[in-house]
Each structure stands twice: as structure tokens, then as C-alpha cells.
Length: 172
Image (cartoon, rainbow, N blue to C red; front, side, top):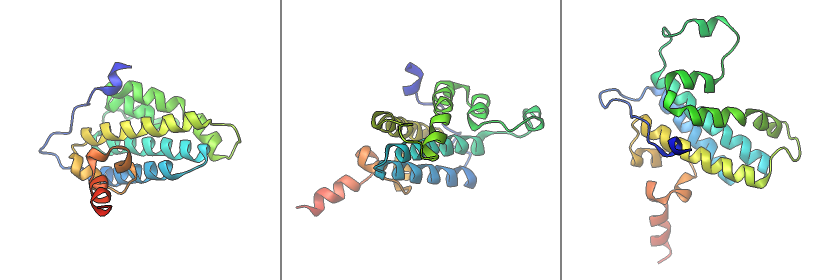
């Protein structure tokens, strides 16, 4: 999937990130940090999926226009992933990927043993981390600001934070 590595367009510099979008981005990073710390594969998978869900919601909070498609509100509830396809069609592969994992997340949250393997959980944590990086870029959050958000991702992507440098300095 080549589109997975393409950087989506950032928000225009003149537009500030709405508070709701920033709050969701913080919640997404916090959930990713929890996924990284969890030992149980089901919990890791569920938290990583929720992180991606919150990141997608951050894009919707920043970019969705309620007057664009009023028919969405008339029917049954629409998933974040379906709405993301309308707001950011260039993220179709990501939306499809995470939408496909929703049932597995529900099974993991319900505590169903064997719903998720260790490999699936680890892969989703990694993929959710990549997605959060793309979302941060799209929202125009500079890498330094992304690193300042509460999360455990600085261990995985040390270039985005000073966690590694501090620990190296402290050990001298």
C-alpha cells in the first residue's frame, strides 16, 4: 500500500488547530501510550485501535463541515471511518484498514481469549503509531509539539522527542 507512506496535506498555516481536534489528538497519543505499555495482546490491540479512532476523529473535528452532507445525519449512525472517507479521501486505505479491525477490537474489549494474537497486537500498535504521525502532520502539529503530547511514542520514534537524549545524558 504505497499511499500509506504518503504525507497527507497539512491544514493551512493560517488555520489554528481547533481545540476539539487537539484534545482528540492528545487522547489518541495517550491511548497509543497505553497500548505500548499493555502486556495483554487484546488490551494492546484495543487501545491501539482506539488511538487510531481518536486520531481520525481529530481530523473530522478539524476539517469536517456539517453542512456538506446532511443525509448522513438522517440515517443510522455513521462510523468515523466512513466519515473520514468523505473528508479525507486520500486516507482511504487507512480508513479501510482500521474499519476492518473494528470487530476484532470489540472482541478484544469483551475479553474474548484468542481474539487477537501477539503479532496482530504488535502490528496494530506500529500501524496506529504511523497513522498518528500522519494525522499530526495533517493537522499541522510540528514534530516538537507532537512529542510534547502525553504518550509513550517517543520511545518508538526518538527523533520526535528528547526522551532518548535525556536518558542517555542521565546515564553518564
